[in-house]
Length: 586
Image 1: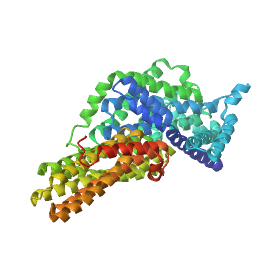
Image 2: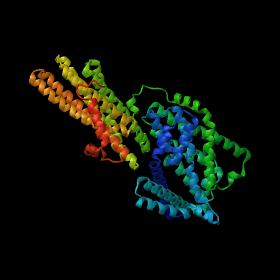
Image 3: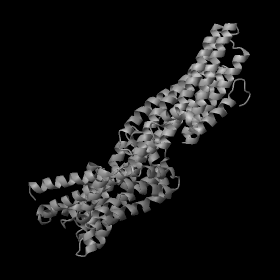
Image 4: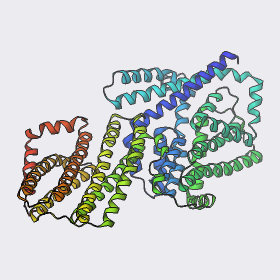
C-alpha cells in the first residue's frame, strides 16, 4: 500500500462520512412530520418506546443522534426517564440498518439479479435520479428525496473507494499481524471503542470495518469484539451532550453508557468462554460484509433482550449514580440545544413553548380586565409577574427560533418557524398592555376617580368584546383552527369602531361636564390599550391563517378583501349587533 492508496483511502472515508451525514439530514427533513408523530404516540409502554427508538434511528441513521435527542427530551421535560430507557434500547437496534445497506457492496455473483444488487450497478442510477430531483424538483419534498439518493450514492461510492484502497493490504504481513492482535477480545473491544469515540458514529466505524473486511484478513474472532467495542464508543456523543443538562438528562446519557457497557461486558465474557472452551472454526474464517452486518444486528438485539426486563434496575442504578442535587427551575430546561440536532423536533418544542407563552399572556390579560372592574394590588402584581415571564420567554424562544430557522428545514417547517417568530412578539405585547391596564386601574383608585354610569356600561361592552377576541385568537393558535381565526378580523374591526364611538361620546361628556379631565385621561389610556390588544389578536389569527394556507401574505390580503367576503360581512354584522353600545348580551 503506497501513499496514493493512503490518499485514496482518506478520500473514500471523507466521501463515506459526507454521504452518511447528507443522507441522514435529508431523511430527517423528509420525515419531519413522521418524527413528530412517533414522538406524539410515545407512551409509558416499553414496546412503544422500543419501537420509537428503533424507528427514529432507522430514519436518521444514527443511534448517537437519537440518544442526544432523547437526552434533550428528558432535559426539556418531554420524556420521562423510564421512557428514555426504552427508546435508547430501540435506538441500538435501529442503528444496525446502516450495516445491512453497506453489506450490498459485498454482493457477488454472475447472475443479472446479483449484478444489479451491486452498488456499482445501481449507484449511478440513484445519483442520476437524485440530481434530477434536486435540480428540477418543484417542491422541497422532492428535492429532499433527491438529496437522500445523492447522499446514499456518495456513501456507497466512498465505501467502494475505501474497499479498493485497502484491498492490497490482504497481502501485507504487517496488516495480518495487526488483526492477529485483535484476536484478543479485550484489545478488539478497546480498538472498536476508540475508533467509534473518535468518529462519534457506530455506523461509520462499522462501515470502515466492513471496508477492511474485503482484504480477507478480518476474522469473525477479531470482528465481533470490535463490534462490541463500537457500541461503547458511540456513548461518547451522548455523554458530552449531557454536560450542563438536568439530573434526569444526565441519567438518560448514563443509561446509554450502562446499557452498552453491561451488554458488551456480559457478551464479551460469553464470547471469551466459547472461544476458549470450544474454539469454533467460524471464528477463524474471514468475515464478509453481510456477516459483519449480521453480527452487529445480533449483538444489539441480544443486548436488548438481556436488559429490557431490567429497565427498572437500570433506572434505580442511574438514580444512585447521579443523585438528586439542588432543585432545578423550569426555565433551565425549557428549550434544549440538544434538540437542534433534530430540527423537526426542535420546532415542535418551540410550538409547545409558544403555546405556553400564549396561555400566560391570556391569563395576564384576563386578570387585567378583572382588575379594571375591581382593582386589587395582588391581582396587579400577578399580572406584572406574568408580563415578566413573557418577556423572558420572548427572548429565549426568539433566540432559539432564529437558530432553528438556520437549520435545514422543510418548506412547511420553515414557514411555521417564521410564523412563530411573528406571534411571540404579539403575545409579549398583549402582556404589556395587560400591565398598562392594571396601572390605569391603580390610578383610578389612587386618585379616587370615577366614571359615569354611562361610561362604565360602555367600557363593559368594549371589555367583553376584547375578552372574546382574546379567546378566539388564542383558541385559533392553540388548536391550529383557521375557522376560529377567520372570526377574529371582523371582530377586530368592530372593536376599532367601538373605540371611535367611545372616544366621541367621551368628548361629549367632557363638554357637558359629566366627566372630569383626570378620569378622561385614564379613559383614553384604557381605550388605547384595549384596542391595541385587539390588533395583536388580529396578528395572531393572521399567522394561523397564513400557516393554514401556506401564504405568508394572507393576513394583508384578508385586510384588503374583508369588504368583498360574504362570510366576513356576516361575521362583522353579528359582532356589531352583539357588542352594540348598551347591549346587555354576553
